[in-house]
Image (cartoon, rainbow, N blue to C red):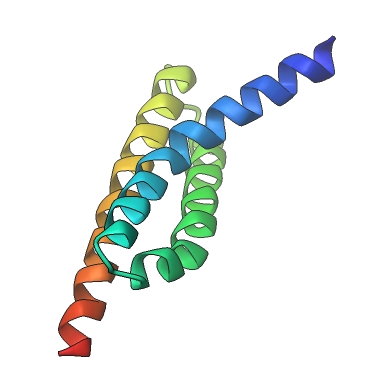
Length: 97
């Protein structure tokens, strides 16, 4: 039962972190911007690395409320990943012209 709870939490974590970037990529893909899907190869692993490294840094710095810090890091990384994917697609569009 603990394994099931851990898997559900992992799935929720990945949906929260990767959800906005994947939605942006699908929206751009439907518009004909194929570079957005190629950009997911770089954005998704980078988001995981950033979240994990900031979580570890927060543990080493002994922040006052680690749960709130982790939620803030996850939300900010998710939003920045989506913005980075949009910027990557815009850069590919400019480079193509």
